[in-house]
Image (tube, rainbow, N blue to C red):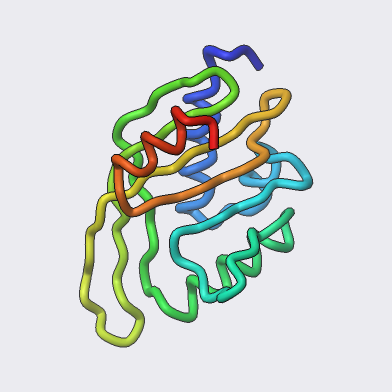
Length: 134
C-alpha cells in the first residue's frame, strides 16, 4: 500500500473495530500490534499485544460499556504515522447514560499495516505526541 492510503487504512481499521470484526481488524494490523488504550483496566499500563490482546481489550470494554465507539473526524498523514481526531461515543453498561468525549488516536504503520495504536481523550495531547515522535 502506498503512503497516500494510510488514512484509508485507519478509516477501515476504525470501522472494523466499531463493528467488532476481528478478522478485518487483524488483516490491517501486524501480528505483533500493540494497543495502548486510554481506557483499560490494567493498572500496569502494559499494552495489549496481538490479536489475543485486542480480544482481551474488547472483553474489558464489554464489561464496562454497552457502547464504545471512536468516531474519527479529522486525519493527518504524518508518513509512517496517522493522527486521527474526533470523539468517543460511550454508554455505560450499568447506567445506560450516553457520554461523548474528545478522542485522538495515533496509528503507527509498518509496511502498510498498523503496528501500534495509542489513544487519548485530549486532542492537544494526541497532536503533541504524534508530532513529537513519541
